[in-house]
Image 1 (cartoon, helix red, strand yellow):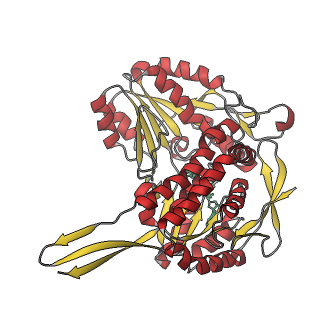
Image 2 (cartoon, helix red, strand yellow):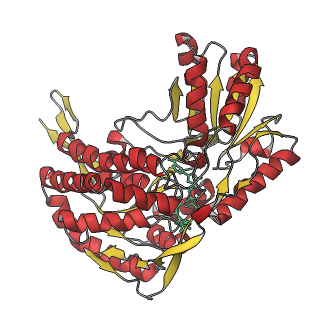
Image 3 (spheres, protein in one colour):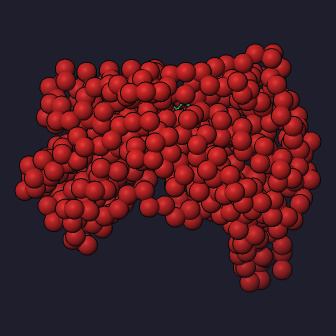
Length: 480
Ligand code: NDP
């Protein structure tokens, strides 16, 4: 059975305690590899390696750093099929999704930030007769990057790439639930010639490894993506240490469909935005609001499509819905479906676990689930479920749906469907969300700021925002 290793100081290393955890394949419920059960000692070794590597990496010309990062991107492309398979097994997601979204986007993260750092510039402000101010940006030193299980390699590299490009060394922790692609990345980094200590990957549990990274005094910046409760805890540890903190947290995203929308496009994309990756994308729309005039027609057409979704082995090409990530997560999602019924909801489609035949007989599968009849105040419509469960509600007016959409503590993303240009702008402006898609979903441009409002997070990733996060601005003023 494969034993995942930590990646510290350029080598693959066993954890200090030599203790390993089970890595379970969610589609089968079977242990298929082992991962290090690391702790504060391993993190201390990683920080020591990073400390040693920091000066040389920061002093390396941006072009040279970019060349290594571009090489890593090329190796991810080369190994795309193997990485997609590993991610599908680790996470339960359909292999087609891993192949077309997660893995290419991981390569794109390295390529984008390699190009960004070569093209980065800083400002100068000239005050005639007084002075010239110019801004320099210095790397923070060592960055701590902690990522979740839903888009394992994509979100891991989304943090690591800008941190490295900006001249930092990194101590990173992937989710303990999906460690395999981060392990494969460490092998690619060795192959690409990344200098030892520049990137260190420590595997293990959040409360041990994650906590040690967040609390380490030599790591001045923490970039975290995960649940809101974990983010709140991390803030309590990091804030008194005056660390830079970027928190990308949960969501409960509204998907608003006006009667004047392109019905077929809204329908097809809503199927994806509701259930892609088993609804385990922080940007999935889990509250669907449909204007009364088309509510019945939409609900009937949508219910048919949801019922027809293929649930099955994530490694089968035809599978649209794979396994949810773990047994514990499956139980959590099923408990929310039960809660929705208790709150007066009507299950229009799904609502139960699915038994898949063959090798996946003991896997964690849930039928895509559609619920109606709930109001916006109930827990089902307020709390993040993070699974293949959506609610559908009718609305009459623009004002009403804006209030419904903004009624949760979250503010990550929103989707609006309308053919009326003014309405698209108007509603997008009124929604409290860090990203609003009008007539599309999950269209991403890496140059744009990314992050949530309210309890969906603090700070922004993406483009220049990420390079700024991983650097300190310094103003130098010269008298003229
Ligand atoms: P968690 O918050 O449980 O975990 C995220 C990461 O933090 C994991 O690596 C976890 O390790 C680690 N961790 C756990 N406890 C601590 C701690 N005390 N100190 C430091 N690190 C810790 O989230 P999930 O992995 O369950 O991911 C799902 C969540 O992520 C959802 O809420 C989703 O909305 C959110 N998310 C947000 C995105 C965004 O961009 N806003 C994007 C994607 C997901 P371990 O796995 O070992 O527990």
